[in-house]
Image (cartoon, rainbow, N blue to C red):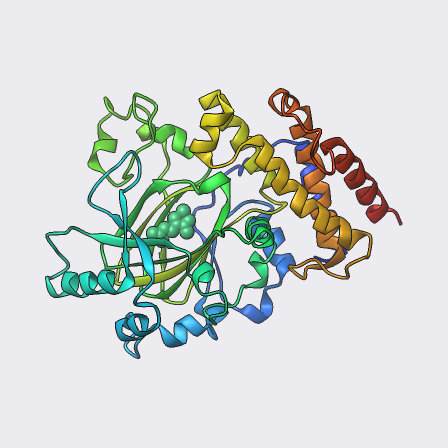
Length: 401
Ligand SMILES: O=C(O)CCC(=O)C(=O)O
Ligand SMILES: [Fe+2]
């Protein structure tokens, strides 16, 4: 991050005064970025991260990726033989698109070999099977095969605290492979913790339906529940969905092979595979959407009232959120104190200053939260208020002329 972008980003968040950005008027269409050489990280911050708007990057951005070379036949179809040879024994999660379980699909686990056998039979059966339409989702390929040359992380997505945090703990990640036949789909949702996501089609095409934050409120049914399928004719039934007429149409994207979609924070979406498709999808959080994550966790707490239940709903409680902030904060403090020349994302001193500033704001709010004040922090190292103090000093020093 350069100094000018840092100043712009700081002004943006100061202007919000701790609030979360609205997006104002939703754009009529999604921007397309065609030229890697003519589009910098600063352009991405200015055009998409700060205003929280989606965009599509052309396939030129993923030209050299190992997965695009090796997982795809010359005809542009999934190379089942290669995938079988390389990953056939790996056990992968598979969702059944035909069965609704709350607003999602039940999952089972099977070796990739069995999934590919199913997939081939599904194609031979004219895209139909007595087993229904099965969709391989959320396969942690990078966790299973850390050294494979599958993709090159684009610089735009390189400030990725969720994966930085999990990598530091060596436990988990939010890096996924999806693979499924034409017709497989992901029900209407917003991403975990209001994270951003990026998604690249290794082969095949996807249709995305995207709704800006807040639009989903008009799509709730009369019980307040969000729809499972926004294309369902039931949404026209004003008795069932009293406010659906107020919702604008979704922004539509047809994502071609090799193209990369940026999904901003808190945008609800539904995704349909138009061909036999393999994609790489990551969820990521950083200084630009940290306040959205924090607001989401507080809303979850209001919804469930019990922190223990909260953990089972969103997968994280306030104590763990503190731990997440602490791990990232300490790494940024190292950069700012010049003990380390670069942060792990390689985005430099200004990025570390920006990150520390964003953590300071959210940590101050966490420390002041009554539920966090009930947590016994006496054994935490550093204590939350000490960390806050260290961050404030480092941020002040970083902006000093
Ligand atoms: O590709 C899909 O089926 C879903 C992708 C998605 O929801 C995401 O990347 O956020
Ligand atoms: Fe998603």
